[in-house]
Image (cartoon, rainbow, N blue to C red; front, side, top):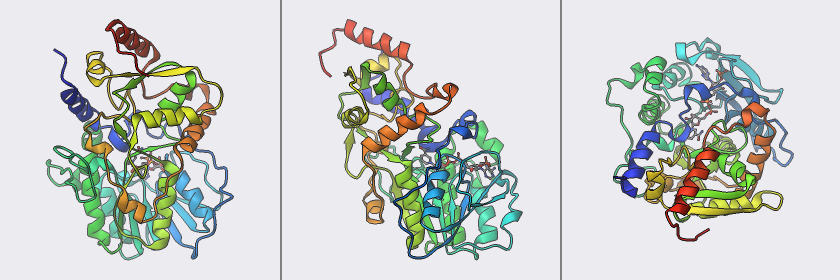
Length: 397
Ligand SMILES: NC(=O)c1ccc[n+]([C@@H]2O[C@H](COP(=O)([O-])OP(=O)(O)OC[C@H]3O[C@@H](n4cnc5c(N)ncnc54)[C@H](OP(=O)(O)O)[C@@H]3O)[C@@H](O)[C@H]2O)c1
């Protein structure tokens, strides 16, 4: 018997949980640095009132380059620390120092100080501890990029910054090694991020710590294609399988909105905990897909075929990984409150800009990178659509 809609969504969301909101599969990490965002300059950015010395931990992944080019355009002096494995096109004035946080190799930080530390890639608590040991009295602010996946959403209908978080039950989280973490295939992502938040507060205190919990980060340079699937699929036209009845909520944040905001949080010395997703008001799946369609150039011949979740379940179409950005109607994770972030200056580009820029970026990638890494395989989509027609689907589009 097919599971009912709620059970299906709970099970599949839990299965996808390990890869939710930023936990990259090992094969997707650091392998396609050449597909990162291109540095095109930011002509409209005004200088910040005061130039800061900013240390960016990471900086050459997906989110870092957007943050760094904005920070440089605002007049800040930026240093990055990473292993030097991933490649990204950064502004030439950025100082790049190296260290491997997996083996606590952070000698390059000794004896230095920065106004602000922006820690982008960290999942393991000992990475935070190591930085804390060296820089706890050598910086005014530590901003940690966390994730909405820290929340324990069981029994919740929405999430806000005070909602319960996941806990690591396996002992001292500081002792979890990179190998042990990898062996769990992402299942420790939420608990480890939560423990890393605690570690940040332990070293830098509430008065110097900023915790940003993003939802799905999307836009040019995204290595996962979880949002990219929709602009690419819609641009292909034809009959497009769409999940549910169109009314389910979705939340994503344009990487540029998120990372430019982190720089402004640093400039203003804003501390505290913030969900970092968008948009400002509820966006439905239908609004997202029609909004993307409206943003794409050309006369597209297409129609959305909305297929109910129970039928998708029978056809083994998965939310999130195949029907990307979608968790169904009841998912608290798609109902994260962002009022606190908006109050603290988070702004949102129009969906149309995100969609058009993402498609432009994707089409500029080498042919081998234009194989989508998420979304529904075209043959499977055709098969499910045919089955839905065969089941006497009610007409809707
Ligand atoms: N993507 C999403 O939808 C999403 C959603 C919610 C939250 N998040 C969070 O957002 C952040 C995403 O960051 P990202 O994708 O830009 O980062 P990332 O790909 O996870 O990490 C890349 C950066 O970290 C450096 N790095 C990797 N291993 C290192 C090591 N052992 N020692 C020192 N540096 C190392 C890399 O440079 P090298 O390789 O050269 O060392 C690179 O600069 C993460 O914290 C993620 O959890 C993401």
